[in-house]
Image 1 (cartoon, rainbow, N blue to C red):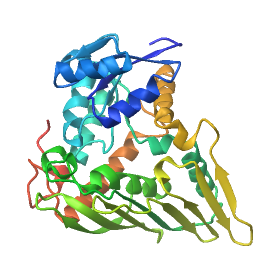
Image 2 (cartoon, one colour):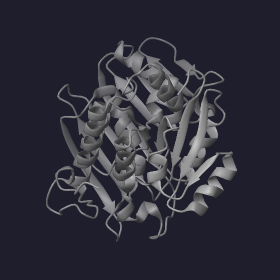
Image 3 (cartoon, rainbow, N blue to C red):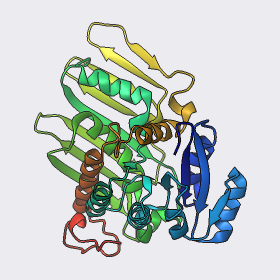
Length: 344
């Protein structure tokens, strides 16, 4: 790594890997130097698409590539523990897609490994790096709407997704919660921290993954959050936070918003909009910039996406799955998922 360029490796070649790489190659201080897939054919096709010099047909070669400063892990959730763990063990820094892992136990193992090695590790929660979301959180923290009373957030896709799709596959960590519900949960916890109590209901598929899930999170302050996710219907995908003295509304696509409206008692509504390099138009660039800033500063985690916050979100996702009865292969049917999965 130099002051001018941070050298990236891409692990996996699916849709989110392509979207992230397309944004990376648009950044003047980022250089994508290698890509890995489970097959050499897939890695080479991806490398040709983005002009990447090295393509590996296995993860180990990328993990041990000394010319790579940081690896972006974009596999399905079920492989995050193995892929990120391999890279951390080999001395690579890691940005790992969300949901961070299948469960909190796996997340704790990765965090412990990164801290033991002194390596950088961050969940790819791009919402937390969005300047407007940061502005919103700052307004709430500074009391712009008074004491927070309620939070609402939802994310749903219309589908339909066939049983063969990864979103329906238990072996790949399928279901609405880990893929989509992580955003509403993370939004609520950004504003309120880890909840003290959780209630949840879900509709499960024949395969045993959640087709749609609703949860009510509560805090000792009296605040409540209603979160919902679905792979059976396209929802409004909006968010709002209401306080004792006002409300903030975020329109469709709240997790990569370029606009929100602040309503304060006794005042006209105020609209906050993104600049030309922010919001939806910036795609995934904000999280990439934050990773590179942290690496240049010698930081092993990001203050915008702290590892303790990621662990707290994973504990909440575990608790919701425990309430609704979603278990993945290797998890005991009668125990908390965070306490039962055999490490990858």
